Length: 296
Image 1 (spheres, rainbow, N blue to C red):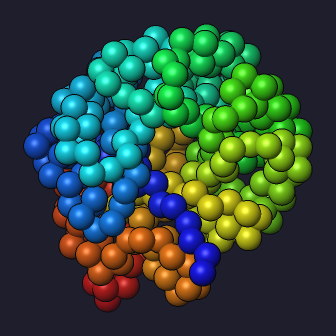
Image 2 (image 1 turned 90 degrees about the vertical axis):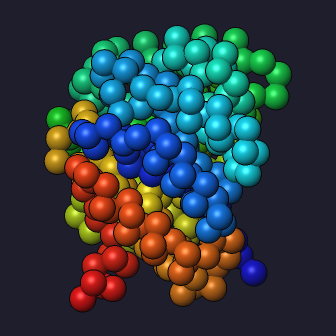
Image 3 (image 1 turned 30 degrees about the vertical axis):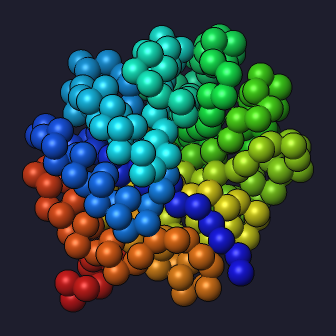
């Protein structure tokens, strides 16, 4: 039977846009509950400027608790080598580096050009201790909020160069705005896999701005992707991508694969009360189709 891996990004991408600070103990409790539902890999936080994203200013505490529990594989998002090294010092051994393919979004997000971010990624890779795992997230792979649809050739060019820097890194193509379309998603992944067939693993990060999140997940799956990001309750959105709504909901993705007979290792029923608590967080912008159907 076929299987996929769900990467729960709610504790990072889902929380980062929420204005009222979520108490650290609430974040930790939700991570524990998600692990109890069968989610064994999570993006638990991000090491970033606390001025830029105050919600994640407790990154060291959240990471320390997660590592101490030893129940999940925690990955930590980092926007540059400086914060990557801080994450390593705090005990992280799985980094998730991100930069945008589009010039405008990368400058809005991390204040550098994509070329500069790629060089910075290379500097971080050169500093990694042996055994450190790495994921590279190529944001705006399908669409940019400022420039529109991203040319596939530009994505493939940066992909090839990034692969040469660290061939063993997992590569994630990100639909940052949620404007990607299933045909576009399937075609880009197919072309990427043909261009770089030796990539260790492929992942998809999907938002649900136009209700196509699950469709795009399915398109990526049919192209051979087996790792998918999702956020409990459909929380999230990019603070530097105007109009982007939340991530595709974890419960929606688990239900989708369950109906297809694809194993996720996640208890779909156990996710529902957790999703309800996530959606009820003050300031949360939930987008779960499962929750809406149950409410009706």
